Amino acid sequence: MSVLQNVIEGLVRVKKKDNAVATEIGKAMLARVGLSDRANYYPAQLSGGQQQRVGIARAMAMQPELLLFDEPTSALDPELVGEVLSAMKELAKEGHTMIVVTHEMQFAYEVADRVLYMEGGVVVEEGTPQAIFNAPQDERTQKFLARLSGKSFDDTELVNI
Image (cartoon, rainbow, N blue to C red; front, side):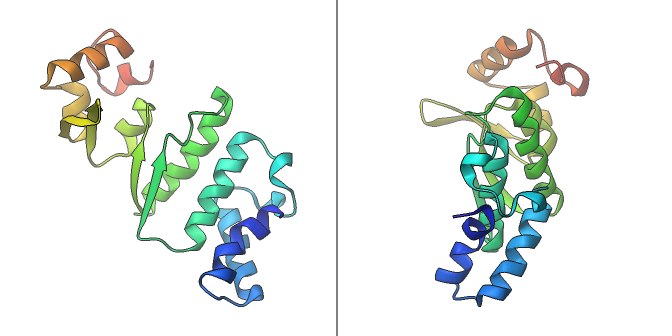
């Protein structure tokens, strides 16, 4: 299936939308993630970052109340990570609720309302990004953040991660 066909599949099969209506929605979602020009491409013709953004467009087309992201940048080359994070930042700016599992600390600091640090499947610490990154209370969180930066976090230091 083409990129556009992938995006509208759920709209047609699950939501029973007319193909023309689904296509209009699909094109709008591809535009939101910067892939209007790739609607007729096939997934194998896209970069990893573009494929991830198609996945975001496909999810958004269904108008979910909540979006779940599990390491959305983990399999991407560093230059493609920015593409995906930019699309996710736009979703956050628009007020979409997202739960994101990530090792992208700068992204978490900039976008999250709430951060949970987990170790071994257990929540070790939770709070605002400022509280967690600038003044972590738990020793494990402190050690983790120290390994990343070598110092405490603030807007300037976090950029260097």
